[in-house]
Image (cartoon, rainbow, N blue to C red; front, side, top):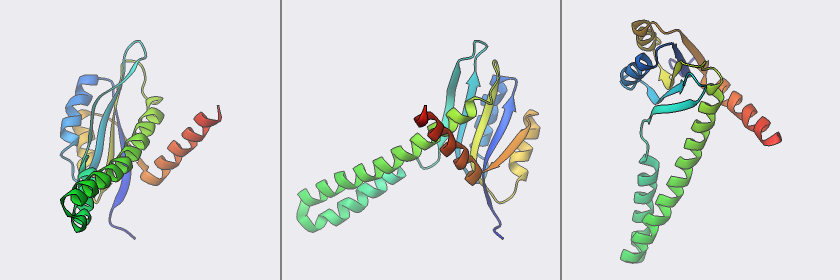
Length: 164
């Protein structure tokens, strides 16, 4: 059995400002990959005032560098074209990840009542204590959904949206 668990953690807040403060603390948790705040105004309008993806831009730059190195075989112009092609490929992969993340936040928006907020964390946990301590610090209930289960919820929601 693995000693780590890839989960999506949801912390519910009645106080939107407290959720934003918890967001700052959440970014320092071990294993955090993504963090976002979902808020719903008293009028029912959903907003994402804070979000962070650890390592954003790395695939684009990394692919560009690899492409540039391969392109060196063709001289300076080859390096430039290789970097551009590699960066484009890396950026396309990154955009797909961001689109899937956005779809996940849309799925979760139905869990946020008017005037409330939800802190969403994509985290690889070796120990649940740090996230549990964060939740306790802010008096927020915590719900854990396995990454696989959450990905399935998003997939089903996408299929429903395309079928309508």
